[in-house]
Length: 311
Image (tube, rainbow, N blue to C red; front, top):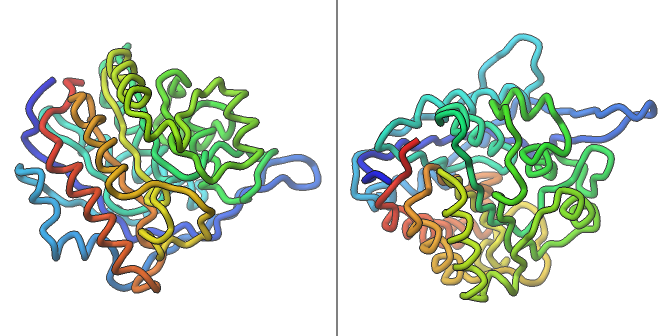
């Protein structure tokens, strides 16, 4: 491990609400996407006002990812390629990458950027904190949105073109992927989780200190670098009332999330943090509470980011 010397921050106003995935009458996958932006103040503006990035105690530089035209690619692939290229450029020795803003389907490009920055043979581990499994496939989708397929693409179950455009040349191994707390369970996700051989840490396991710390230690011992991804819907709805979609019962307190992310940061293996799904539209009802609790979690991540792996 090496000392964290700088923080590269990627922000974006790119939106993806309503992008759909389905099968047509011939059984072919059809994905519909368009270029979309969130207008007006968003969570990253709140982070700036609070001086949140200073909590890392190191210099930082902010890059804004915007839509880029790539001939022959649909918007969802263009977005993924943009995040891949921005992430690959940002990852340097002594530098941690924080992606603050955006949505779960952008994670494919972030992982691709890290994978392309690592020496051959080194392994990536992922800690994916989310209320949902994001394990849907084009032939088995409950939500019919592309974001619901993020993890299945990363693990190599589906959507090969999406994964490849994102820079992921080798799918992440299921044994090196921790999905937690998954309190918004769905049959389609359960089926594909079993098919992939993914051993999740459920809502109860998230609060079992022996189980949690043991799994994080095992992961850190197996891999060379960790991507820590947090979707704010892992928290109970009262803490993130501006989240776009209805949240079912369950979920974690900010304190529980903070406690567990500290364990991940303490491994010294975290190279990338993505913190997402905080803002779906500016000034949505409850956004002040949502931004506040997001800032609490993200601030603690930055305060505890002292080391990064040598890639």
